[in-house]
Length: 334
Image 1: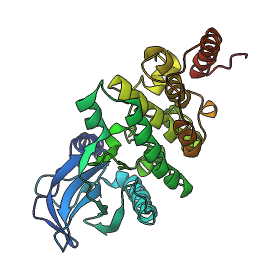
Image 2 (image 1 turned 60 degrees about the horizontal axis):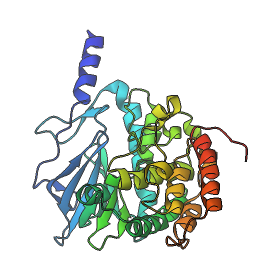
Image 3 (image 1 turned 180 degrees about the horizontal axis):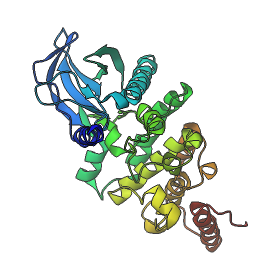
Image 4 (image 1 turned 45 degrees about the horizontal axis):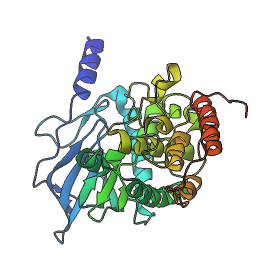
């Protein structure tokens, strides 16, 4: 009978949690409405004591906890409590680390606190669109100048994150917020999710197929700045394709991804396309090892009007052969 109850609870917990109701007083904030609901958290629009809007992220993984309609505190099965508390600790520590970080290209954490048997992260409320929404509205008219400008600024923020020994681990167009002046802001960090996933086998993977690096799926001990770089490359690929590239785990079994150098040849500069393919190498050692290394390449001047010579064309094809080998985890002789 106990086993049946446990299974029933797990099935319930995998359903969507109910959000806190509009008008609810949460510490010094007033909940206005739900902004988003995911498998790991709920994000609300709220106002502070002065009436200023803020975004509040509530830790509530639906594979561990269930909040029924009309309830405030979540229900957590006894056997799930250690994993829930460990994830809560990681979420809280992430909030503390982000609160010490102040950068125009990273979402600002204003406060974090415990309440209702869980934890909350209070962030600045940004006005604008996600990069995913920008792509949807403008594809296929995304220009090279737009991409270089957006991702160079984004890498400024990512450099700051990495300098604090933090990783984003869920970088994708829907987690890149574009202010009204098209300034990118990194939002919705996934580090706590990844830590929790590796600690508890009952949790569903929280990464996004197509944007997660091979290390997200296997060998998590290899996760590093280069893992976020893979996600940056996948996001740039999505700007051109309209959708993310083939998932990394699927690529490792049967790599069907058409390299950017092949798919958009002569539509964008070779240098930009080469850079995207470089970021999407399956072997992490072949990718840019830091945000600075990638940023340096993206800011290099490119002469797109230079006529191609036969020698340049031959060199490009030779380079492309090596890239194709690297994308498949092989090293081709030069």
